[in-house]
Image 1 (tube, rainbow, N blue to C red):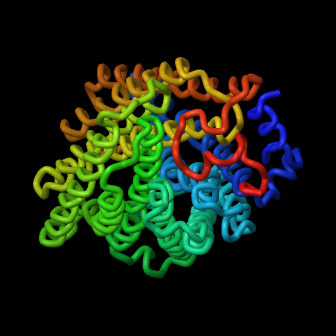
Image 2 (tube, rainbow, N blue to C red; image 1 turned 90 degrees about the horizontal axis):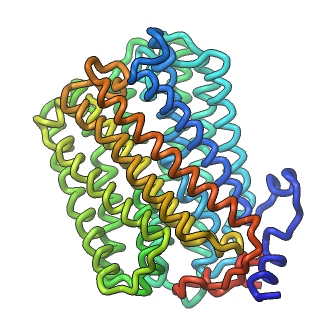
Length: 513
């Protein structure tokens, strides 16, 4: 029997089996794999809600708009708070972070499993809200509509608060693990770039997680007792200000770990270390700092003072500088590297393309005059979708295709992976470019399904969703198919550097024991 097959038999997967054993495990690798299952379930739910909107945009589902308003509300709540923000730290982060820094486990193993339990409970409460009285007031929960609209708001608020506490636990665990669990010979500037991305994202997860839980509970109190900072008599901009202060960084503590993943993948597939390592780390820190300070750009179309909007516009434009630095060093790493023609490469190309589109869109939204018009339209919706479906999901799939042999001890079919990546790339752009056109025409944010005269665009978006769906199903089928294949895999099939490649595939329960 090969070394890979022997390692597979004695890895962490050979431990206690059964749902109870997995759901009580404190092994960071098992927690990461369970999180992968939960987040993929959320992604599937998001696809189903997107399908409802596409069907409506091509003239289906009759004339009842409430179905679509509910779909829009829950689609965004699920995909932003339970997928976009946490997915890379809780999947690849939990699984790989201790391996990359030479630790046996996360600093607080108990907190790892409790973060998953809070996440699962939050998802259950959100779905219970949909089943027992779906809310249709929009995913921003803008006041005073969220205080008076019908619907099962109590489980919705409780679910979001639990998700925020899950963010907090994950962020604290990541920060402590990096600060206290590194090998003695590993300084901060010896860490892999993926570790840096997850580490920086951990600070935002912790800070914004507790803030999300607090403001949601205050909003719940305002609905229950009729007063408070977000009560019926409060300024609607007060809630929107806090909401975007939490949600705007969500894009950044999703994108920055995604950038770290892409850099690590690019180093592996090109067999080349990133030039300008410290420049990359500095650009990630700068992107984090400047990005968080741009939260008020979303309030321009809703009555914010023009002088304040101008300040946020200037800060938003500055985001382009660290983004350009990161793009330059990504391309520099690929340049003259021995780039593998493999599935991770396809998803890396998708990430670069979609990130470029998202940054270009941000320039329009950051400009005071165009932004005042486009910021409240489908144009802004398209940017969020490009970040969610185009950047974060592309980085996740690139990382999974790259580290799957290490995570499971099984090898993937690269031709199938590349084909799935091509369908995904085509689907994302066919699905969301029509949203940019609708936004330029003045269609309000998230209201694409109700746009008059947009049947052709709706059909194009529907075709894109089919490509996206079949692309993702191809990728998932490749993952599942690899698990039933007994073909052994080497411990380091990419010839990559990094401590995670020094252990067997899959890793043993104690990592470096």
